[in-house]
Image (cartoon, rainbow, N blue to C red; front, top):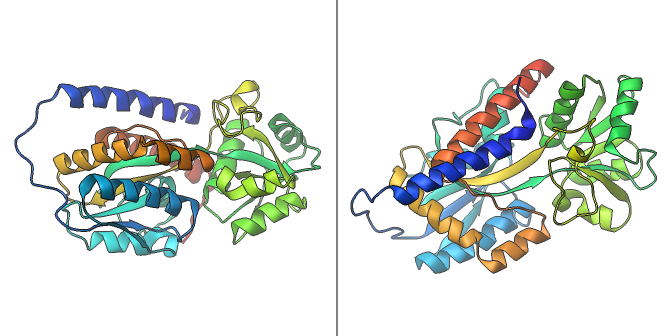
Length: 332
């Protein structure tokens, strides 16, 4: 049986092993100079969004490191298909990369029957940028004081407890499906078109709860319109240390919902080049100003060389496949 609470830990172990191999392996000969021109970072996220800002901070560091312009090319809309189509037309020489999130490569292959790309064959993993765990969000005056309260209510009143998400197939939706599968409970899903609508609905108790990140729901939490009652992961968030982890209660121990974004290259990009970009990206992510900006979004950098990143994607994809099949969820 798939145990979702282990996939980040397994990824970390693999990353450490792969990093050790990289240190002991010798160079395979001289590599072509890179970059030799402007580097384009394509993103499916809108300008000004959390992932976009996180990418631009890194782009500035890479531009200094490489001595070349690094531009961010926003291609929002179409479930990321527009941005991915742009990357597929690029040459595999490292000068065109794409920022994608975990949904694009781990859940879309199972929620879309006519996906216009192959997540395993058309994209070459380079390195993750950041990940963030979600919080369990309720209204300020909600009767639910803990995540255990929600689970108990759902068990006692099947189908009566409501949860919202920012669209069918979103991490907020799939994360709740994961909870239902783990706990053997049934809740009612209420999808919204926009995140602002969703968290307003939580604040007014139109829905009982939702999953949310610091970037998406943090403003309402700071305004005391909603409360974070749990972190959907094994440890507490550094940005919200007062919010308990679900692993602190035996009823919900092992439940985990996290999202991440990472950089990918076009199919056929040489492995040695991806490893060079990955190493430079690691240096950028460790820069103090980058780490400070990420803390503001409650984003956590995590380490994975290309091979380890690819393994993590396959592992997560399998876990989500089981949940999506059980829910008979299709988005097209």
